[in-house]
Length: 270
Ligand code: DGL
Image (cartoon, rainbow, N blue to C red; front, side, top):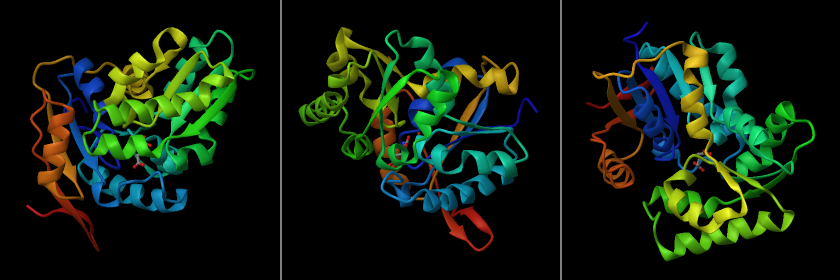
């Protein structure tokens, strides 16, 4: 069990913000990162389309004999968490619930802002999850797809990114939220800007970080290393993925393998 890898999934480079946290906490573990870059962005797709796309990856991960699957994508969590948990022989963990729980524990005035993709916003998953942990909390949501595109292109420190973050925050702060959930895993790539723009007005919650911390509760003790590893797979162009991902996570060595859909499932081209 201990040597089996943990799968981490996103539509693109957003899930790296979750993997980076997990890797920092458990550097003795083996991770497989899967990015469905060919179908990015998920946020503008229907939930049923996202579910179908994610379930292909789930098969791929199961074939790699993983010991758990982290859906490091809020949109795919909204679309497929429940079904994945039903059909997968190993634990499947979505980023939404650990983030919602932390937000409920953090808020003082009971007003929680959630920024996400359009699909996550429409799904209502954060409202349900927050309601599950704190009946009285009021949820103010806003979709910010432009931030997803910017992060995926590696534009995380630009003036344009700052203005886009400010615009999204301006949609929720009039509702006096004291807690802001970064409800898309692409957003923590812009965390410096978020922290500067939010300032003292609210506490920022990163559901990816909460998920990484929550893992031992599901999987038992995890290895703090050394000796772990990370393998990267993308359905897109591996050179583009390596270039952008390395700029977003400069400490990591990112050499992805390209995988493609075949009638027998997702297969590596190498
Ligand atoms: N990073 C993903 C999320 O957390 C999806 C972004 C997208 O593909 O639109 O929702």
